[in-house]
Image 1 (spheres, rainbow, N blue to C red):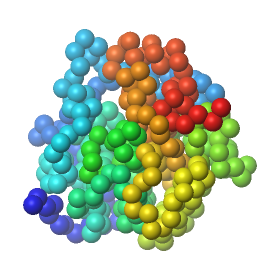
Image 2 (image 1 turned 120 degrees about the horizontal axis):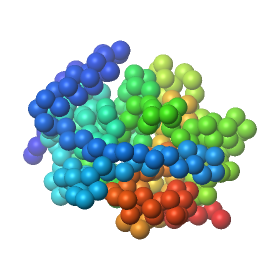
Image 3 (image 1 turned 180 degrees about the vertical axis):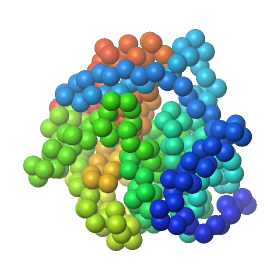
Length: 301
């Protein structure tokens, strides 16, 4: 049975250096296969959605085809050595996303085989917070194929801020923070079922304490969107996307993976969509990003 080698977890304050080293190596070895895109901003409900368009409109890039396919083999057991960044903990390893739209896109994968449709654990949150304290960005989890997961091996993801030029953090951050400041657990401008919660300031300083508290709050979000769950539940009751920054978290239940052939994952609910061509871009313009998110989520209207 394939295994991943063990290395000492990265020392605090060194993850950015490890990412830069891995990125340079991945580029020189050819292991990294970026997906070149241009982008367009579409504002709806006061949110500046970013729609990225794959640059090659006449021939789908090999990398895009690969990232959209549902691999039958496990790419993380073992992981590709040329993409290795660092061991995060005894249970998790960080590697670069081979087929990436955004630079320094980190995958935080379980060292042993675990299923992507298992709920997140305290160990998962410890690993994510170890990375978030070093890299200010968006952490997210695609809970199942319907939520946009392309691999069955359990993996969280982290993309550094900003997600695009001209955007401070992620597009939805201002409206999420505004709702939380008003003591709300939902964002009035969102047309899909969801729940939000704050992250405590001290969590960034202490990943151990953050992991337990964050896990409890994550389970509360399920209940707030109407999904019954307990601390003993292992398998997710339905597909969902989970998003988290240093300041807030959000959970969105899903009903379908695609809108008119356009796949939506966690970054979509942060305000970033990816389309393959001008035809799909026209679909997004016509429908509006919020309508698309409502269609692949659960409508509250």
